[in-house]
Length: 406
Image 1 (cartoon, one colour):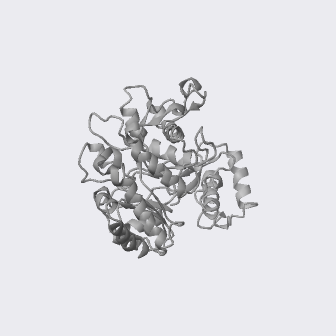
Image 2 (image 1 turned 180 degrees about the horizontal axis):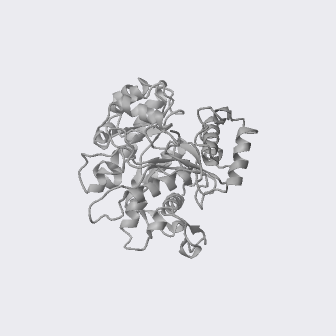
Image 3 (image 1 turned 90 degrees about the horizontal axis):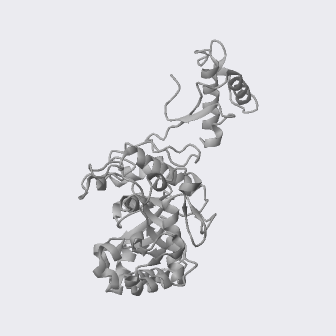
């Protein structure tokens, strides 16, 4: 792992505002202080049994890892374990106790309103997940899930969900198409239709989230929000994982970001954005298991992006180019009259200082409308904070990661 200060420098350069830690690493929590970044801290599964069996152990954990650092570090939630029911079932009986003990310690420090407690569950415990309207949780887990949901409802917390369309696609034996898993546009006859509600689903992600809402409703919980604590796509895999590619990983995460940021919500809850964490920030070269396990990251450990996300249209959210540089250039095939009109607008009403384009000035050469328009477009785009709509100019401009100046 890079040093915590390097991690935080990357988060800041990328303007990442929320991060989930898989533990309560002191160096990481300290490095995040005074950045304003919202932090989810986690109790690892291996510490769960101790905390779930002892109120004082839980209180000590909260005192050491939360109270000692808040509010300098903007801790907003605590994840108690992860996928406990599916990966550590012997700890499941103490899961809700652990959550309640941690919450009680927050109450004692008057932090329970600011910091929410929950535990990520795997979408694999949802049975009969399509159509979403008839999904339900694996009933054998009801003795844990019902008290968990009761707790989340009574404390205004949220259900944490780990959702992986990649695995659903892999395990579907062809029933799920790759385009449907990757949020690619589908012809209406290729969309999945919930036979009970006649609602159309255009991607697996929305179907998983709505199945989760239905599974909660089946147990009579209808007002607990869902946040997705993990989702993503691997960029490399073994020979038996042909869909773990750079192209697919880029497509999934770019489309996911656009989908979440558009706040379209899901068919069951339209307009309610699903807060989502991308798994994960860095590739993990030491991780055991199939090759894909090492390749879920957006960045290599040295900070180099694994791929450049395609985010035109979703504003200046995250361009995981380490230098965070994007530029606005004139399209080579644009109509010269349209380009000249857009250049005149940028240098006039757009208030760009175009004096460097005059004869004898530094940006006069090359003296053609494409080069001059690119100078004006890019200057305007940077001044407007690099939002996607600041680089349109009636369709004659495009955002690029290649610096047009020389």
